[in-house]
Length: 80
Image (cartoon, rainbow, N blue to C red; front, top):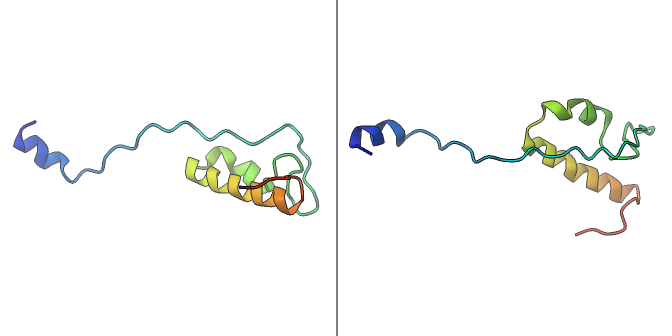
């Protein structure tokens, strides 16, 4: 790499590493309760409808919320 190449690249942000898409938590038990939370995956109706437009980071945040909801609804018997 020549010095002129370096001067063009030194301030450029590195390209993000490849990241596999976050898989949907859907378990094909689609029933929203009175609080608008799915009884199968614990996502809200809005989270379900927006899932395909979310970034991986946003999806991971939703999955964290799903876990918390599952604990609150006493559907998970273990936690980290």
